[in-house]
Length: 151
Image (cartoon, rainbow, N blue to C red; front, side, top):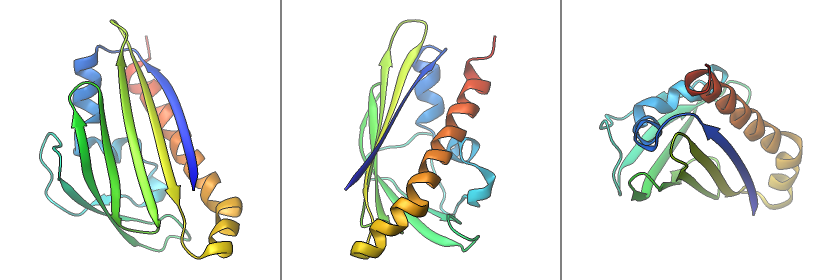
C-alpha cells in the first residue's frame, strides 16, 4: 500500500473553497490535459454520498482507460472521500480535508492506493506511477495557486 499526502493553503473562505472542490464539474479544471480526463456521466452541481462518477483517463501512453469512483463520505465544509470502483488500482482511497482558518483554508489530500500485479505492480510504481501521481498533484497545486492565491 502506498500513500501520497499534499497540503496547500487556499486564500479563500471555507464556503468558496468547498463550493469549488466539492463540485465534480471542476475536477477537469485541476487535472492536466495530458491525462485526457473526460467525465462520462451526468454529474450534479454538488456531490453527495453514494454518487458514482465515470471518467475516461489516459494515464499511460495515451491509452484510454475507464475509471469509476464513488463518493463514499461527505461532511460539508470539512472533508469528502472518493474511492475507485473500476480502474487501474486494486485500492484507491482519496481523502480531501478542508480546515477553516478564517480568511483561508488548509486543504489536504491523502491518497492511499495499491497496484495490482504483485512485483510487476511494485516495479511500475517505482518507475512510473509514483512520478505520474506526483506530477498530477503538482499541477493541481499550480492551478489552485493561480485560481485562488494570486493577489
